Length: 407
Image (tube, rainbow, N blue to C red):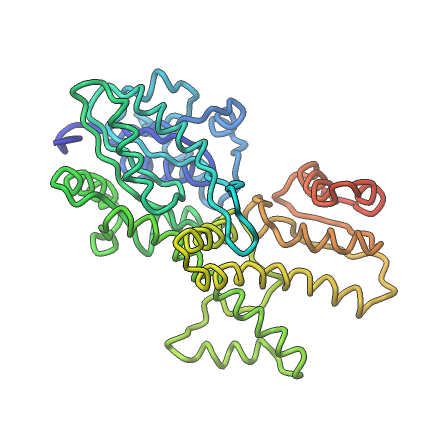
């Protein structure tokens, strides 16, 4: 059996970003008899994790790290020593980024497939360095069928006599509440092959989570269902946001109040109140990417109507952001300066990826409106760089119209 239950296990996580870092911290916190090693190729990121200035901002994360470091035997290490730590692994988590790619023939209507270059490189590295039977757990967001491909890739590179099982274990973290999501998850999804060895590997991972997660919240599926569950969850959440934002445009034209309409709808127990507040649109690294990923999959399967539905969610989101900026410019023609409080895509995080604030500020600057920006969690240089990048050939406008405050 892979990874027997009567020995002290070593878990190695490849990737110390927004998923791998917090996941490893909470695993080490709740499983003190498991050695957790986190690998990343970025020296600066590893040094930040080993300092008091963490590379990401998450409520409760610093407290968890301090609790681990205060133990007689701390069981968490952040390192760049791939060659030294991977051979020790009983379980390997892969938590690297899978950003939007530039697939041949992709268009706005056909969606965008993820770039799996970094993921494949991590898999190959793991396969070449492990020295004993191992369970590989994929936490990266990947296309349906990736676990099967990963298993073939790994087994073709393993040393003779070493056994391997590949599991899917998608993350469902929301930035700003990641620590709480990990400590008290709605569910833990584990996908495995339905072979005896695959099911046994899933049991090993489930037993690890069961150290703090109630068994009834640990759901075991096939790998393909597990991989698709992550994409489906983000699509459904994105769809809900775009639906209420579309409703807000109708309300404005008809003289209704979208807040009142949403409150009335939320009282229906089939609908509920979650994510029914109209806004400038969703942001972050996952929603847009994952919905377009699903759209691409549907397009490849010749499900063009389905692909169009998915891409429509993203198109409506872009429309909402542009509509807000346009309304401000048209309704306040004499306005000269706008203060923007908050630059990250949501509260309690410093992540600016796909932040609606970027497109909103860009539209204001192009219309000759000066902008003053403040965000307590986003460094001033990062705000300036993001706005300049969004303006492309018009970066001179940022120099004359943008002010970033330190407080």
